[in-house]
Image 1 (tube, rainbow, N blue to C red):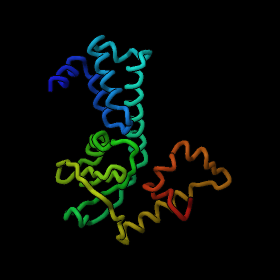
Image 2: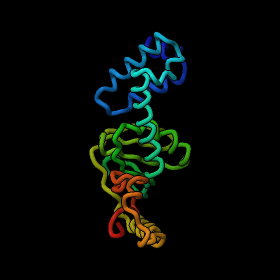
Image 3: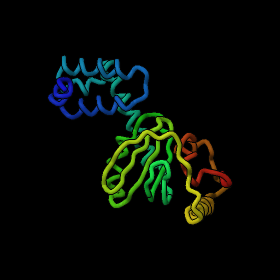
Length: 200
């Protein structure tokens, strides 16, 4: 609590960098953030902009990488409708499977809760075995081992329709797989309906 209060006194940029960097999965993140915090306590709030300093720069890179991952998931998350999740004994309308390299669910929370204010939804991070659940206006995080994709005929029909639409827009002669992977890295493809077989 004392450290948190100290970070608050250093300003929102310092606090945000520490909190966001902590969501990274880098092995050295604890030491990087400790060195950054000490530098800020020594130099004051202006230290957050001293990117020539190796400790400040390392913390900046941590924060940037986490934020980049968040932006990617905001772009590439695809929801599907499902009437019930048996393991949770509840009814949901939107679900998504993702494999995040970093633990980004807390940073996705605000975006999707404001974007889908009247929907119940679940975003399952398979890499970390955690799900973000929003139900009846309340948000919680759950430990979850696996998720069974929707088998509902209506949902499968919608997915097939989306694939056909994507395929109809594709000009095969101009397909550039390398450029496609630069814009939508292959690790995201498993959760993107349009990138699954038979069209890719």
